[in-house]
Image (cartoon, rainbow, N blue to C red; front, side):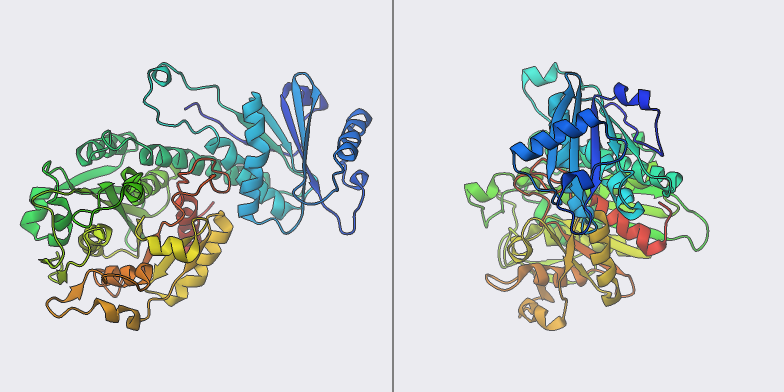
Length: 508
């Protein structure tokens, strides 16, 4: 995909306005303002005022926040007016940016100018972030396998310039725009990975693809094969992997050495990478199995984050462990009431072979814990219970450190990828007590599986390590989410990036 670069400016020459094929005016809603004329910027020409007033009068539009008006000022230039106020948070700015920019993209506009000079600095910075992210993610190209698609070339990139008032710190605004574009590009790659066809992204192909991507991003790569994991005693991981005849499962480790100095922070990420989930002996229904080639979203998120850290040169060490396997049905597939031994020595009574994600993560989290990180985070499309609890527009977070909960909520608000914490009180784990093993994998039915699954995972994380589990209930949302127009959202990349920056005070 072609590169884009959002430029943030204080002003441009009047003659330059004509070089843009789309111009977005962001109008600030004033208290008790009932007339459109009160919102118009001073530099707006009388001809444009007249056109705009005719349009709003014809459609009986009031100057309310969120109202959007567009028209062709000339055959070659489209203008858009949108009203905002102080209540616009990041999620709303991202959603509005898609609402503004997608029709311009579909209209064929390539060079865009957004005038933010009439809104306060705090809102202008949010707009720089949201519009720069949206202009990048709206250029996402679906992975299609048709003959026609194979012959297509990437289209011309859309460029976006932003005008802010003289009070804004241009250097800060430009850094925010650049980070938004980097995150947007990473989201595009993340979604592209998730949307690969199941037979195109087998465990073997996925590992090979990640190895190529690691080389391109100058990341250290290593791979623990299924055979190696067997010698190590990773029984929880192997219980899932043994159902496949291909024996191509394993755990990928990626590393970015952003800081090697003594005392430098170390972030470790873990991602669930089930390339196809049949449910095993607890076979899914056809409707439940459709789309299960995307059950590797957590691992794709972990990879995308370590690659983003390398691209943006985060001043910390970042490692990622990707648990890659398929949950197949076959003669060797694990079964209910099996008892297996995990890498940390705990024995697990199997209750549901479709709860495979927590099995893969158990051994992978134990491996990750051995790194003694300053922060450990894992990502997984883990439970339907989390979707039922919080829908697909939020994701659930869990942590073994209560003092992180407010910071997680705040990072979700600031990034526009909203999360909500759930409790991990020990009495929720009563249902995981087993008569024959150290712990049950889950219960047969009922309960609050998103909480119980998190308590299961907690058993495989060292107590002295701060840990956050992200259950990706918002990995897919019908109609897209915020600035993302596809059902697959790539959720988590902006959230984790913001949380880590806030947590360690990393620069923008």
